[in-house]
Length: 232
Image (tube, rainbow, N blue to C red):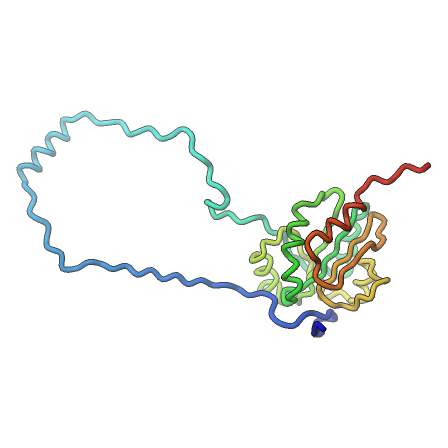
């Protein structure tokens, strides 16, 4: 049985959920010593060579290639675009949800200290990038504390290259949150991770109170995107 702990009204898997990695590189250079001094240059030969250079016509610089490949993001060190992180209270969350009306809605609740949440994050990243934003809305809700945004949430988003915006909802009452995301009919009582899929009419279609597996999101959402059949 998975152990859980209480944190800001949400039950989560114990243990630190993210680890910052630091790499220390040390380069040692060996400098030679005891080398014999360079021999004295022949001054007459140097003068003759200098005179030849003065009388020789100047050579134009070699032309640069007219076509040069533009540096790739990898070569230039550019990072993929990351989503924003902000704090959402009950009122702000209501406004965000209102903007998703008419779309299939996927809601994922997670935290940086939840190990199953970390394991499933690549699935949501791939899903978010591949989805049709005109038909499917994705809402990522973090249960991390507001004071940990700089030290935990933002580094986590960077380390995992999360492309979607994240709303920190630790100030939202879990009972209100359950009503807002349409989870009243489920047994969800705050455990993480938790994922809910609602159709265009905000009817709950499927939910997970555990880690989502590859392909499960697409399998559930595909039928919800089919055109509505015309009335007889």
